[in-house]
Image 1 (spheres, rainbow, N blue to C red):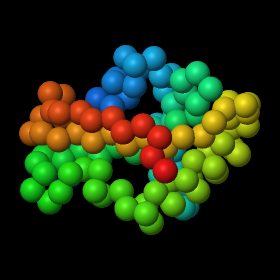
Image 2 (tube, helix red, strand yellow; image 1 turned 135 degrees about the vertical axis):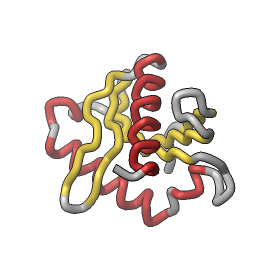
Image 3 (cartoon, rainbow, N blue to C red; image 1 turned 120 degrees about the vertical axis):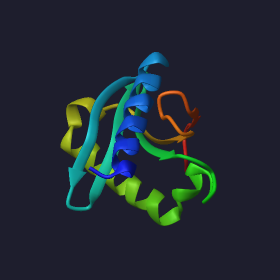
Length: 120
């Protein structure tokens, strides 16, 4: 496995722990369809939250959030809706939300973690 893949998985693990510490229930991880993948699907209160995780060693090529442009957001929304349709018992009566978690630093376990809620 490539170093960037190992870093990405470590970042997703850190993000999942962060979400759980904030009171979220992680429902699914790395959910895949032919159209793409969702990193984390979680629930908290009335919200069903799809979380995209971006892990970077440095901001040399930009902040992790900059990697999620309009095209990527649109794809994430489509995938989020597909997840909700595939899991109606969980999605029912919940508001769908898209969050981003950016992790920047050499070691994902101790790197700076930023959580942007309700990306539109």
